[in-house]
Image 1 (cartoon, helix red, strand yellow):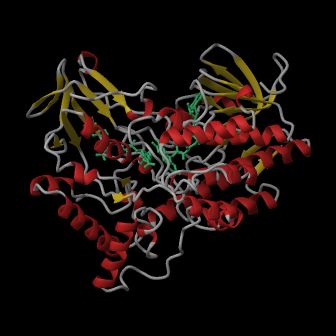
Image 2 (cartoon, helix red, strand yellow):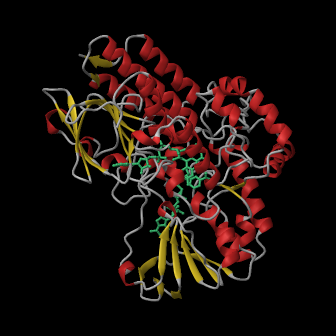
Image 3 (cartoon, protein in one colour):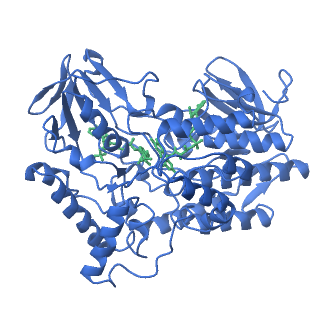
Length: 538
Ligand code: FAD
Ligand code: NAP
């Protein structure tokens, strides 16, 4: 705890110690604020603490996917691969936390269960799983967008006598699948990253697929030493460029023309280049101005990838089943993979269509679908997360008049700039719904949010103000704007976690703001420059 006498309110409570919570602690400490940081895990890292499944790595290039706030830190650290593995990212986060001596101010192994606003005193009353009560003037929710793992409620899970795991809560000691019959449920980014590695170990590997997903080769490779040295030297310029792009990535090239303007041969040549070079979320998907807004443009690239899948997978029936047919390219998160489609050419790997033959229950010895039973020693759930709102709504948060956040957001999240929600004064959300969040390089976006929030708290305290709360009309206007921008794209058409469609009963709203990080950052700066226009200060 930094600077809190017993029972004295702290300036700021921070929930979560991933990239966001750690940076918030660093900034607030430099401002001289008293803080409490509460983290459910036993150590720092957030996403990279929890997601230790085999093959886990980032899909934004490591040199971009790292803090930019300290030139000393970015000059000192060296990434070894184009896309860093989970252990390397976790080591990096620990390196930063140790360098800034952050851990001593974090309470680990502790879950925040409720946060109740005291309207008369303008204080947040926070209660933890250990029964501790904390009072704070401001509260920063650094709880993460992909931090509440979800295991589907299949009947019989408790009867299953084998081992089962969720990718988002993977055991620290690792898992050895050698000689085992393993079932994988889920073929999003996590399932696709894990597949080639577990398939090599397992005796039999059964992949239960509900939706065939697009994916692009990551093109991961070791980073040449001289390339890294030159890049690191140039970091300040690279970072400056990155924040002025839609995705917060230094290699982003602004597209100039529609995918409909290139003839077939030229388009295929471009796609072939990106396919072989790897990456893709910021290259192939951004190669033209209209891939995510025009169905015909999108379909031209989609066809290229579908043809690739058919050319890689030898068994025509398996190839067909792996070929996406129900959504536009990129409208579900586009995974970057290594040897994913190739893995289905292995004799020990079998793909099962659970769209056609749905899973009905787990049994003592395996998994049952409507038409078959699969004998399994282990099951891996790569079934994703209650994304963007899950971790926040998992906490009993109550604002002015005792209104609960769960009630306020029952038809979908409502925020101003994704930073605050009206009626919950002094509670900030890092990369909340209604901000570009998961459609960007998250570390860079986290830095932008944390700096905005901490400057705002500093501004209020310097002016002797106790309270900030979004104006309801401004919030309504922002929600409408976010929806309008979303509706001008193809994103809302897919059953993705971006829209909440992966969680039964969750309201269907496309949650990220997709006008581009650079546009959004400028809007946030303007709001601050205008004395926090759109927010009521008291
Ligand atoms: P998190 O890292 O999620 O940290 C939130 C922390 O809050 C967690 O440690 C959690 O335990 C804690 N917490 C939550 N609720 C409570 C509570 N009630 N009480 C106490 N503690 C609580 N993004 C990219 O930009 N590029 C990538 O390549 C990329 N790869 C990813 C790979 C995986 C497998 C996953 C799951 C996500 C990936 N992401 C990626 C998104 C990633 O979540 C962000 O990049 C980033 O790590 C988020 O940091 P954060 O601090 O906001 O949240
Ligand atoms: P996800 O994308 O939500 O994928 C979940 C998978 O589980 C989907 O294939 C889904 O099928 C399937 N599923 C869910 N419930 C099911 C059920 N009842 N029966 C059968 N199948 C079911 O989750 P994720 O793969 O963990 O990824 C989440 C996000 O984390 C990613 O989109 C990405 O942003 C981030 N991530 C990034 C990386 C990286 O490369 N850096 C790696 C992992 C994760 P449907 O499609 O039919 O719903």
